[in-house]
Image 1 (spheres, rainbow, N blue to C red):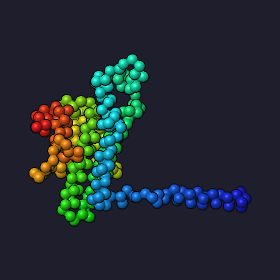
Image 2 (cartoon, rainbow, N blue to C red; image 1 turned 180 degrees about the vertical axis):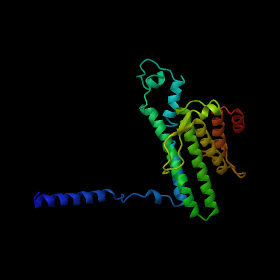
Image 3 (cartoon, rainbow, N blue to C red; image 1 turned 90 degrees about the vertical axis):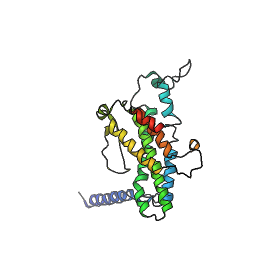
Image 4 (cartoon, rainbow, N blue to C red; image 1 turned 45 degrees about the vertical axis):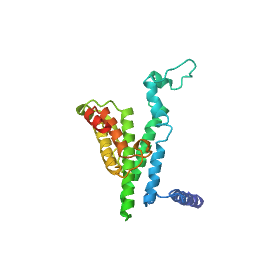
Length: 254
């Protein structure tokens, strides 16, 4: 190898190293994840994002409501309907890659990830907060995040798991992948059906504690647009019904 070839190889190596160092740079217009949430106002914005994520067309304004209706015969095909949702309607040839079903699964876990990100940052914000009023706000935000996570998990369990018959049966059935942290290096495997429901109930207990409606409440609970203690009871009644815990279902529905 002559001297010119050696120089070319050295220059190529230097150029490759310099280019890789450029790729490692963080975008200048981005905020690092560990620096993004520092104040109560930042947490408030995360809560708004959680509410907004439920407006996805794959959830309550779309797939999550229409697909079960199609399978439950609440919709009837007529001549010339173009076979839209035909596989869902016929309960036939529904593949794992069905994009409508994928969207429901992905967007429910999207809600859960938002909740986990908020919950992971709460302790840091609490440590920097001295006002009792703002600390109460943080408890409210935690309650809203825990309720949202419980709601998302309850829908995942309902849609993607077998029915809950009894505690012994549920302990041997597959549930869903449970995550409590945004970056927690948690094992990504399905918990049992029993563990999945217990996770939902634990979140609902905490949420109800933080979202209590005070004696000075003057509005109408039927017109409330935000999560509160009674939305927790409503979901708890529904989950208890799914678990065949009928006494609990009556208790929380009352």
